[in-house]
Image (cartoon, rainbow, N blue to C red; front, side, top):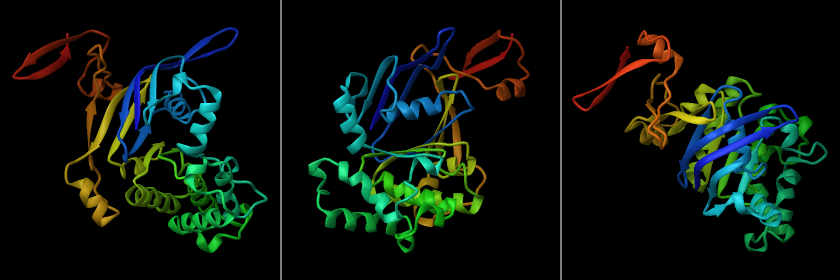
Length: 295
């Protein structure tokens, strides 16, 4: 669904240039539910906005569903945002119109969908909006205005809005960042259920470790590049699908990621654990293992 090759994004002002992404390589498979984590300024939100068609890369290649976002015209980009991708923002003020009901909010994007989506009639839009509200557990609030709903309820309606035009890719920017733990768990379950039932590819940018543990793959971005990935241990993924919530502390294994030049980033915590200081290390190969130690 997503292919990034050497993705670079440079923000320029009159006095400074900042590289938000520094040659990012990433692949996201169709139907995958995955999370992107990283410290503030690591480039994760830049990546999400780029995939959402909100900003353009400075260099590199970005393909989404076979389409090259780097080479899109403005008209093609508008069509892409209307029909291929759905977005859930952290702040509900960006997701919902305050003067429309939940049902009306979900219907709004459908008025801009392509003809092949089959949503041009008012009846078709109403039926799909009701179905989506049912899927996110908000059908009982279909006539409520945003100010009459809790933050968690608004966020679930926002997910329904993002799915209104049946996108192939759903992007979520800190979807549990403004809700309590109980509501966060509920939203996590909604994402898992939608991924399972609709097969939609879901990419979530988050600081929420509990949310990151509920997906099959977690990508860590540091300094504008992928430094590591956490993959759900074999067997746990299927158990997660069949049993739902799981309380084990460590469901995932962490792997360092080699870039195309054979470089790998090691975290400060790993270096401290190994007792390594400074920027020079000794590298040995022994029985198929690469050993890094103090010089």
